[in-house]
Length: 246
Length: 205
Image 1 (cartoon, chains in turn blue, yellow):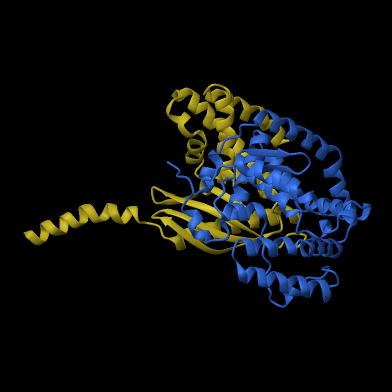
Image 2 (tube, each protein chain N blue to C red):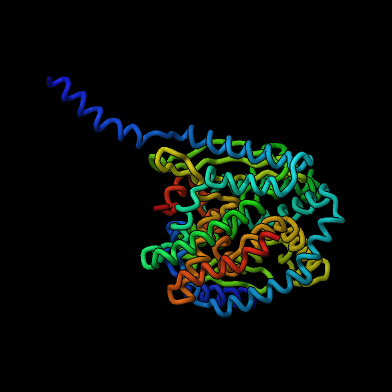
């Protein structure tokens, strides 16, 4: 049942995607936003929620939580996500990254006490970042229309699909019964709070410099996401795609 | 005689060529490091109480043209509308954009007080067009991040036209916002000017 639902969802999503991969960050900026009125409405709701609850909550968490504890939370969440990284590294044909990721997961889960301590980095095993949106891009799937997701924020059709698929290799979803338990939702809420707290300075800077906050968030997210996807290759190459200043 | 003619020819053509190639990637790296060191010094003086905020803001206003090519950036953010708007409309936009850029410069640089910047390397896109990479560190929570600078040469002088933090280029983001405002108002550049003017007071407060 679960696989059927996934297959139907993935088929619809993939059919909607452009199969032409985005060649550059400049081109990514030119990609359309056909759902702009709906996206703007969701963006406004997200902003209101962030101003009223999520932002203040994250700042309160940041104030009362010592940095070593926050570091442990980040390490724990990153370690929990390693099966997702492993699956996508394999799907991208990157055997070295997959090997590093298995090594990191085993080392940090055991010696690193369930991932709270990042002993793998200390031992020189590099960390990799992979997700299914990136895998789709690696396979040549274009980013598709821009989307603003409730609570989560900026995305696009390809990466929203990726988020959905990445739920499956994630340990919090390995068991149907346990993934709905209060403790599992607690872990997800803690992860979201930590991410929001870490982004506070960046979001503050974006708010201070915005001309049109919606377009700014769209532009910043697209550039950042394109840079992440392009970072698989040589960064020098991406500089050749920068726009000209006449 | 032939020798004299060849020498004259060489002088006439080689001199402008030499002028066109007056900067190198090392110059661009040194430019970023020097400018950053001056800003860091000013921010340190502000932090230690040696200088007040008003004098620091005045210094930033006076020095912005030394650091950034504001006219080139304002032309860039206007995109194709630069060619269709009248000179009066363009002039008003440039003034409003300049004030906006100064307010961004003041508010964002102050956030870097107490941090250090170290140039790591650079990429030459073509002659006179460089991306200088740097690392910012020493913040209150020990965070480190990359900041990349797009440096262009104009008339033999190096100036910044864009800066990238966390994969996001500032001028490109500003361009998309301004083009969106102008596009939503049927190509009217004055709409963007008005929007920039309306947001200025909140930045200055």
